[in-house]
Amino acid sequence: MLRRRLLTVLLTLLVMTSALAHSTAGAGGPAHCQPDQPECSAGVQIPPVAPGPGTTPVGGNGQPSTPLPCTDQYKVLDPQPPAGYSWWQGKSPADYVMLMSLCPKAAVGPDGMWYNYVPVLKAQAPPPPSPAVLAQSALVTIHFPAPVQHFGPNPDRIAVNLPVWLSMTDPGAIAGTASAGGVSVQLSGRVSSVTWSVNEPGATPVTCTGVGSAPAAGADLSKPPCGFTFQLRSLPGRTGGAGTWTVTATAAWTVTWTSSTGASGTLSSQSTSDSTVYVGEYSTVILPGG
Image 1 (cartoon, rainbow, N blue to C red):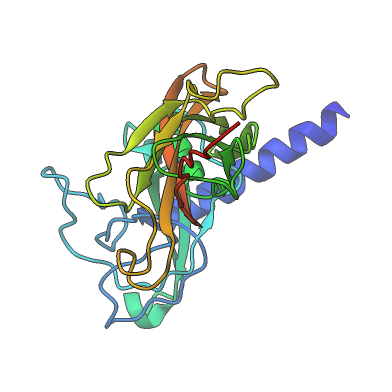
Image 2: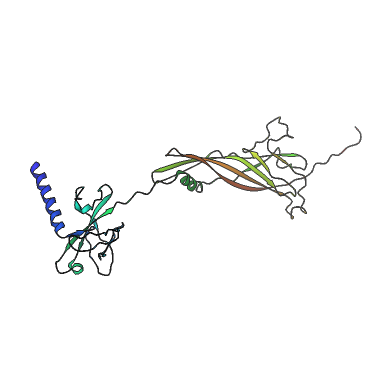
């Protein structure tokens, strides 16, 4: 076993020494160099290099002096040179990777094939996404249902000067999730308030906390927790021939989010629906006699 390891080390040193004898300080992977291509790439930024044994690929100002015409066919040198080796040009193997290219004699002269090595900065992982931005992107994918409207105490007997109880079906919590770049967020939204608007002339929108409620048995019908009182009958002449008023309910959703990073926050959304109601009038009739 020891003899096999020693043989492997000797072969590796022999390959690297042979390659060095044919190299410039440069970049890596079999490449067919073309005179009309000024620089090489391998999915990463690879600086052009100056051909010729013993030259330095990057000048003192950090820019190449003479571009090496190569294609983009590169590969990672295996094995990588040890730390401190001259090919690294003082760079750390922890941050850089050594690439290798093989150039034909047509690009470099009559001597035949030669190798080119360049340390290239390793691809940096993109920073993780902002949890707040991720939560915002998840918010737009959530479907918030339109309010299902209810009118009490009797939707078929709505009349002027009598309070109407306003409520909507409670949809409960609406959830959503999103993940990217190792970060995940969870969202949960509920209706926090509802704004009721009526197209009766002069009517003022009513905003109520929560979804409202229908009147319970024995409740004082004159005092709804969320209500509206019509002042005008929905006559065809007032409603453009419809004979009904339009009621618009706009539900405001409060959406809380938490993330795998520990960050959290609150977002908002809304959903809307329309319905029509016929509004009549009760008349008092006094009958004579007992």
